[in-house]
Image 1 (cartoon, one colour):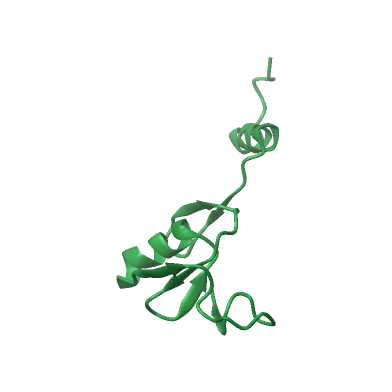
Image 2 (cartoon, rainbow, N blue to C red):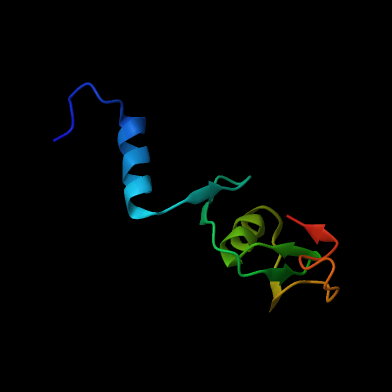
Length: 83
């Protein structure tokens, strides 16, 4: 049982730690997981995953071109333009 005086933020942090869930808040306020499965957008940007692209889509209308990096250069696995 948790003490009544425990702040809500601490409770949320404990839940996230115990479940192993980590989320990243994007610039549009979206919450995305931290898994990296790169996707290429019509803006030439490689996004870490579909969720991050979806957040940007709400702001700019960008669409997904393909799963994978926008650039094929192995020295720059996330392309020239990386979110």
